[in-house]
Length: 124
Image (cartoon, rainbow, N blue to C red; front, side):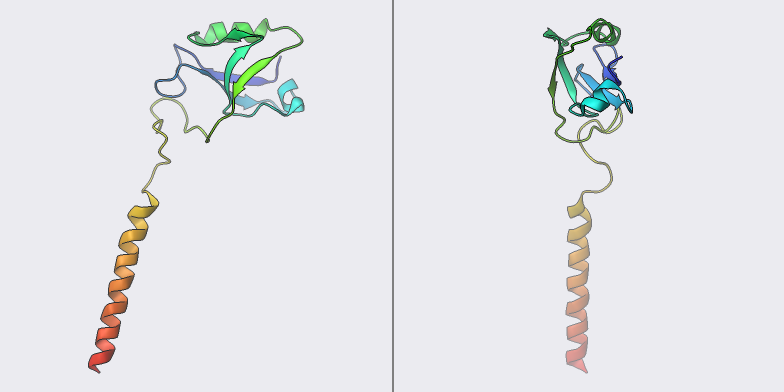
């Protein structure tokens, strides 16, 4: 094989509102691993010039299985790590609280504590 697994397709969307095909795993010592250019999370746009748009998962798998010995992939490099399958924070949020939601109140609390301490010292 080509040495990698894929996810996605019109029937198994990996990213919400995106039926594209993505590399889910590069197999150690497989062809893709040894070549070194393909990365987990890359979106595969075409195989040997055949567009993967609007394909079911099993049809995309068949294209890869029948790709032959010399395989040309058109990919889009991932911009950021994917958050997982549909329903698992697929809106691009990393989860948890945003940094500002922690820092702003924390800084305000620290500033208030310093102000109280300074006022208390002045009264002594």
